[in-house]
Image (cartoon, helix red, strand yellow):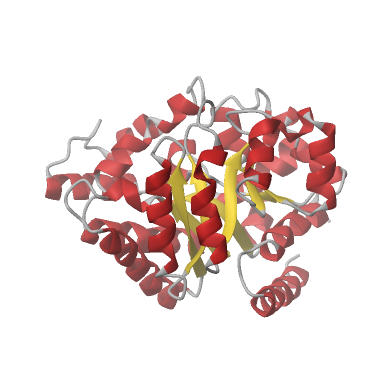
Amino acid sequence: MAITRETIQALPKAELHVHMDGCVRPQTMIDIAARTGVKLPSNDATELGKEMFVGNAASLEEYLKSYVHTLSVMQDTESLEQIAYEFVVDAAAQNIRYVEVRYCPALHLENGLTMAETFEAPLAGIKRAEEETGTKTRVIISALRTLPPSVSLDLAHAAIDYKNDGVVAFDLAGAERGHPAKAHAPAFDYALGHGLQATCHAGEGAGPYSVKQALEDCKAKRIGHGVRILEDPELEGFVKENGVALEVCLTSNLHTHTVVDLTQHPIRRYFDEGCNVTINTDSRLMDNTDLTNEFWIAHTKLGFDRNEIERLILNSLESAFLPEDEISALVNDFRTEMEEIA
C-alpha cells in the first residue's frame, strides 16, 4: 500500500521512549521563566526553539547539556503539572493513543520540592490530559548514571508508592561511558521486586558491554536505543531470541552521533532479522521532531513500507508495560482502525 506523511499522521500510534523534560513547549518555557525569574537563551519562542535544537552536538554528553534549560523551568509543582499536561495533549495531536513518558524526579528538587511533589504534580497533569484527550499515558521513572546509586535506590523506593497511580517502570538514563549500569542494580532489584517493570538506556553512548549490563545486572526487559548491539553477534542473537524490545530513536541517534547516516541505521537490519524494534522520538524539542516524522524517516530513509510501519507500531503496543488484557484490547483497536485508513 502507498504511504504518505498524512497516512502516518492518521495512523494510531504508540510511543515507549520519550523524555518529558525533552518535550517542553518553547512558549511554556518562556512563560514559566517570566514567572519564576529564570534566564533562558532567548525570550522569543521561535528563537528559543532554534537554541534548543541539538543537531550539531558532538556526542551524547554534549547533547544532554541542553536539558539544563528545560530543567530550569521545571522546579515547582505548577510548572511540572502544566508541562506534563501539555506533553499528553501534544502526543494526542499526533494520534498517539498510548505513551510512556519518562523523567527523573531527583532533578526537580532545586527549589525545595519534596520527592512526593515531584511525582504527584506530573501525575496530576497527566491525569487531566488523559481525561481530555483519551490518550492513555503511563510513567517511567528514570534514575541517572551520573548520580550516586543511593539516589537511584531512593527513586525506586519512591516510585513504588505510585505504581497504582500511573508509574509502571524504572529506567536508567544519562551519560553512558564511564558510568556502568551495574552500579545501580540494587535500585532495579528493588523496583522489580515490588511490581515495576524495567528498561534501561544502553548501547547508545557505549558498546555492547553496556547492553549486557542492562540485561544481566539490571534485568531490563527493554533497551533504550541499543544501536550498537550488532557489534556483538552473540548479544544480537540473545536480543532476537528473547524478544527484547529495542526503543529506537532515529533522529536522536543521528544527533548524538550514535549513527552518522540515517540510511545506515541498524534498525533496518534488526527488523529484517526479526528483532523486536520500536520507533520513538526521545526528545521532541531538542531533536525538532515528532512521532509522525520519525516514521516518515523510517519510510523515506530506510525503506519501511506501510505494512512494516504498522508492525512497528504494534511492536510498541505489544511491548508496553501494561497488563496483557489492556495490551490485547489496544492491539485489537489499532488493527481495526488501521484497516480503515486508506
